[in-house]
Length: 251
Image (cartoon, rainbow, N blue to C red; front, top):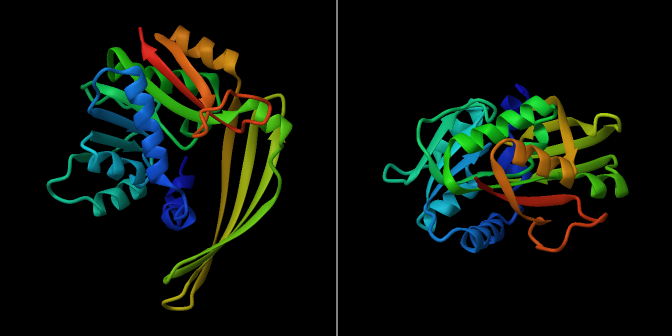
């Protein structure tokens, strides 16, 4: 997953219009609905910490883990000395921090990057290892029925700030027998400060999941699935749902 080394260079620009505040509010409502009292969070696949800083501002103590040292460096560069946030490099499939949290979450389709059954199980085991009995595991992913109904298409997007102009062409390659999509990114980044342009080619392999297999893997690895719904809208999952939210409790 060395792909994220280049990804970190334009990650924040790419998602500058993403409403992290509304997503955190949504997640806090899920936590309150399923846990009497929670103030510590482990975020598996934290990226540059955008969710975590908002959780921190609301009184949560958050540890963010990401496979990319570049992502972690960006997150730490934004952190104040008295912050209740910790950012560490680690792999969601095998990281062990020798402590437990009230909530483990894995957002922005991190679980969809676990494209083999072994990787998916190991990521779930990581969540299990960092929770006490009754602790919550919250994650989102690409939802199979929605992906197959509204299949991914070629997209061309442009993003800009005072320093960079980023153009990204996304080309999907579907593998129906694997329940996976290779999303090929061809990215051109222009540095406005010096006029230099450079190109990045990335391949993100994504797995779309179905409710029965999510239920199976959670149950097999010590969790009870307590909620499944459409991400943010809280609507029932249907063939039109691309993004699914799952909430599970450690048995």
